[in-house]
Every structure is written in structure tokens, then in C-alpha cells.
Image (cartoon, rainbow, N blue to C red; front, side, top):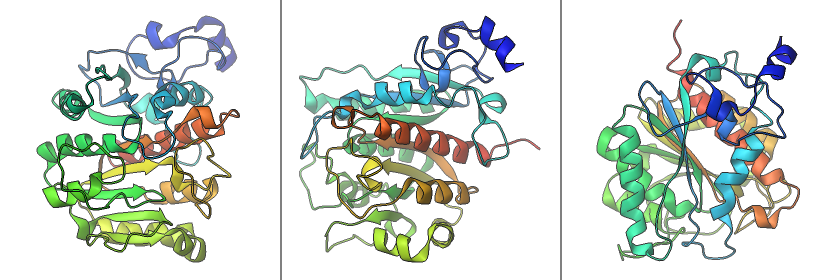
Length: 321
């Protein structure tokens, strides 16, 4: 049936009627949207909107993550003809998922960017859709959290990362991808006691009360037990999941700005993400994919898989029947 469908389908990102269903067109051609979802700015009836934030002006080392959303979308075409493995349901057919395109902003006015991004995400949430964000550097999570906290109240943060990103910074005008969670905790939009950072392997003495599961603990405990510990911390609290691709070891994701050895494997992450099914997820993002530093495309492929897993986690608790 899929082969017959493939003969008829082309550019489903712009030709599909509605928002549901797998795409059987050639994965190497056609208009690129995330998982071949319909491209639209009208979110009427949409359950979840995927949006790209091509911003990398807050990095402390190598830039290039402005190209991340485009690369993740292209890599996601590899997954578009099939339901995700291991979940037991097909979110692309059961839920209305759309590609909302990218945030438009003036790169020359960095000071205006945080408010523009917060308004962009608020616009999605106000249309009763959830957001799945493709970054961009990790600073983008801060304005996104502000938009979510306005709707949901203080959130649990589930962060996969090599770095805590909680270095002290009391200057609210600074835009820095290493200090935004310090600000988020101080601002009260993240509840540190019910938050957890996974894969950490850089030194930061003050964790601000956030629970840390460093990379070594994941390696020693294993992904199954790690997922159990994460769920015990989050409980049923509303949670935002942010995944910095440098949580993965550079062997699996070399295309990132601040790679650190000793990281998580893609196999560990895939097990943990599936075993986290049931957490009260309200939104998520995948950030710090920097295509110029990975000519193989493996980092973008990993990013696309992470995005699919976040999508599945959001859909899991909202299935019917």
C-alpha cells in the first residue's frame, strides 16, 4: 500500500489535506518540513506545532546553530514514512501536527530577540496548540519557558545536557546560552526541587537546588534505572523538556558548539526517552545542532530522532483509548 501511495504523493508538506497521516513520498526529494507535516500559520484544530528558531547569537564557542532547524527538518524526512519504533502507536496519524515555520526576527537587534521569541511561542499556545521547538542555541529555551510558565505556572525542567547552564548572571539584558537557567530559577518560572539535569559533565559548584544526574551516573546506573529516577523527581508536575544535543557524546553528535567527551550514547537516550512515557509534558525543544561541524549529518539525524521522541512523549498521555 505504501508503494502505491508513494506514486501519488509529492510535496505533502503543502499538498496534504489536513494534518494527519504518514508521508510516503521519496525521502530525498520534495518540500522539506518536519516529518513532512503540513506547513501552515493557521493552527486551527492543530494539537502540536513544530517551529524553528534559527538563532545562534548567544553562543560562547562555535556558532552555526542558526542552521540547525533546517538540517533537523531535512533529516526528519528519513522518519516520515513510518510510525516511530517502540512506542506502539502512531502519533502522526492520531494527532494533528503541523510545521509552523520559523520565527522571523531581525538578527541585527539581538536585544529585541527574547521578547519576539516569547511572543511567538505565546501565539502558538494561545491557539491551543503545544509547541515543539527546533533550535538554535540553548538561550532560546528561556523565552520559551517564560511563555509556558505564563500559561501553566512554575514548571519542572527536564534538561539533557553536558552543561548545567546555571552560571550566575544577574544582568537581565545579557543574552547568553550558559546562564539562562540561573535566570529561570531566580525568576521563579522553574521549580528546581522538581527539576533534573541529565548527562552533566562540566563543573558548576552551585546547582541552585536542581537535581543532577551526571553522565557517569547514567553510565553506571543504566538508562532504565535512570529513567525511573527522573520520573520519581518529576512526579506528575507539569514539565518542559529541553535537549541540548551535546548531552550526547561527540562520537554521536560532533556537530555542536561546545562538545564534551564522556557523554551519553544514542542508545541510552532512546531507552530513557521511551521509558519516560507518562510524564506530564507540556512542551519541549531540541537545541545546539550545528551542521557546519558535522559533514556526515549524523548530529542532525540524532536531533530529528530526539524531536520525534519529545513529540511521542507529549502525545503519549493524550491518546484516546
